[in-house]
Length: 104
Image 1: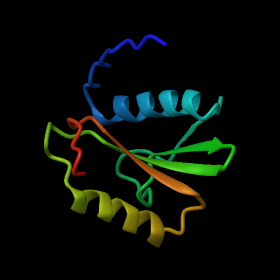
Image 2: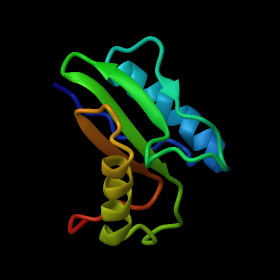
Image 3: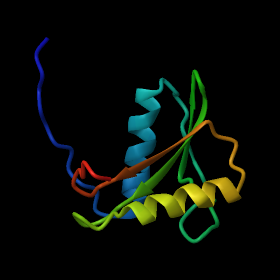
């Protein structure tokens, strides 16, 4: 199998990043209608996008950060928000524009 490496351009704003995540994760999990959760400024319980997957509903938190700005404490905070909101999900994915970090 051949592997093709490419990089998706980083979105210019948070809203564009959420839309991109909804489209991509909709395809990944074969959900033709991923749902964004509210809009900026509204309480979202740590979840920006919902996707229905075979294993159940998945929540996606979209974090548009400059490289290196996403820290483990940010991930923990988003997990806590989703837990406190009692979001009906089986998994939370934190998607980011930050550079990959093996430690994270």
